[in-house]
Image 1 (cartoon, rainbow, N blue to C red):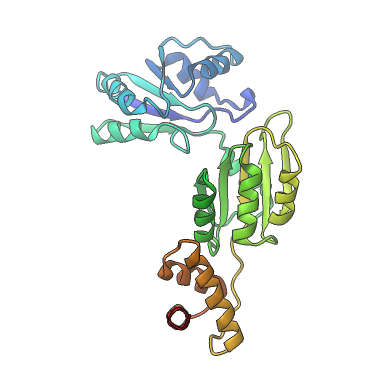
Image 2: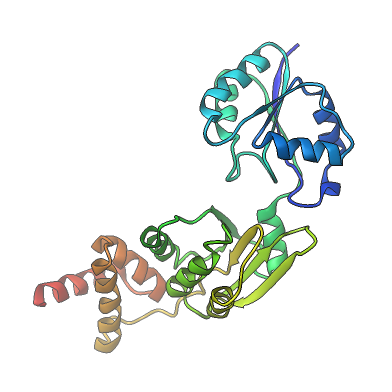
Length: 286
């Protein structure tokens, strides 16, 4: 018998969102690798299921060596079920190492689809869903976080982020600075749970709300993509001076000149080569 690895999506809040297939696999899998074994056993109890296979932990600190153990079970013909605390394993949760190990060894990997916090938040945000990107958790430190958002300022697709409630206020403030206070966004909190809340509005308003409130629960942030820029004519001295100032401010903040020019030119719809030359001249004259 050929073994297999199964990535299974678990409920992001309401246990009743669990599928029949998930219940069946929990009962029959030879090995269950859970991000948090206690939370997994609470889910199994809520579903009225007793796992027949062995249950082990598989989290960010041990998934490197756990992947070898999971592979051994698959190679021996067993079914290994990988679950995270909520949603799909491997999406900002442990699971990738196991997939890579089993795929590299030539054994089957499949998935049991189900709840997704990212897609649920996107659908509820009221923002465009035809094109979107998932950016996971932003950097924790303020400098790296601001740099990451500046690099995304011209991203035209709707962006989805996860965030800790403790950092949500700071993150929204940094987003407002990088994307503009008027950029539409949504804060999605406690999805599918009793206290589910969706706050929609401009980033500036959401940042003010978070700064004056106690933000609790699981947080997903959805931000609208950058609007189509109105091209800037660099032959206009005033317009050129404004963009060059923006470039030099970003350089002073630590960005490389080429990266700063590319970001500002993309936002303004300006000619990148012309803006680069103007910025070089301005630096030489200063």
